[in-house]
Image (cartoon, rainbow, N blue to C red):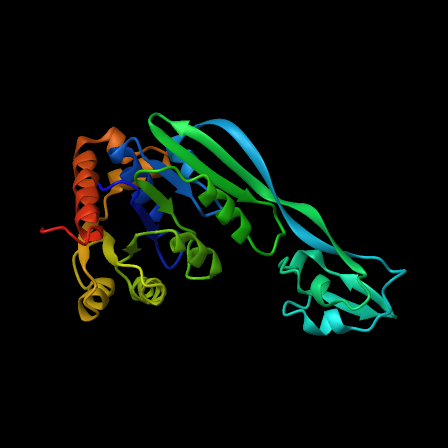
Length: 285
């Protein structure tokens, strides 16, 4: 794998298998960095079982109002795109739960009645799992946006190969996570819903100009709408991972299949090679 290559593993919804793929790619690669960007529900640690060596509290700025300076002009509340401010009975109220910390209200307040204070957003954890550098973060319950947490994770990214376990979906958290990627591996289930979710992440990767390919997961005999979508959109299929009760059982026990099974060690080693070739614009394979 070329140095400083960052691979993002993503899917259009949770439960598709992106964490399974991410942790196994990291395990067979060794001497790599695994980053769990699913900051709302991180679970990569259940598989890689890192030894945490450091925790860091990440904060974001929130506005506070000096009521002695505020005259209730409503300039800030009308400008807030998230409706996080309201003037009721002549007093400005701030709803921190929906504030996105953009800072606009403080910037436009004509009486300088709003100032910023730092509030905890979540925790970044840094550890090791064998030769794998492990990074994850967890957002506090009730917060509105975890983008600063993902930015904090990426600041700790090491050189060399990095595997990003992306958040599910195709929203702003996924956008922030894959912004740092050189290549996106899209994991898709063999259902109509799987094809729909594949289309969403494929569109996002295309909009961001990220080269990508698909891994068909939980495949069985019969029609595979995700495979049909990939072929109809010239989206390269790097592999197919058949549904396997043994694999499902190992996953439910929090085990890394490629560590437990020679069959899966070979499978994910081959997949890593396929990812390397697909992500390398100079590959001749």
